[in-house]
Image (cartoon, rainbow, N blue to C red; front, side, top):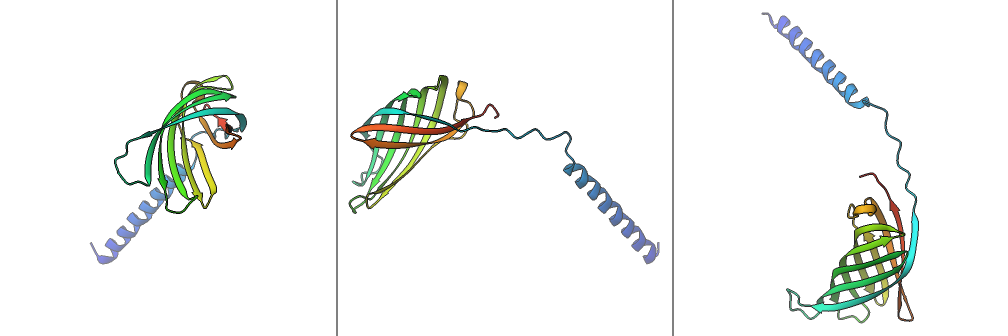
Length: 173
């Protein structure tokens, strides 16, 4: 076969390859069925009070500025539940500066819906100014609380612990 014939044949294979690739790409971009309507999530607000018991636990590190505690809570109000968890703390040499992380498993009812879910805490204090984020661990809801997502805030006034919980509940996985 001449070099012209080989060149034409190679060009034909390239054109065929590009055509097949373009057809496959177009097919992959064409939806097989209409897209489902996006789920609308409505945020619900829950609030109430809670009591908490913290008990120091031993740590793997004997450093004075690191600590570990067990958490036991009793929630009342829109959330009627108990929780158990663990907290890790770090103190600094600067008065009013510290940090903590915690995870707690909450079990009970949220506005009448029964189940469990997990809260994750991340808190810091810088020269007395607090910053606290408490979120529901994704996909941790069980039973009637499957699909729970949200954030919680805590307020302590006159020795009373109060929570505000903004959440959504979806039945979609």
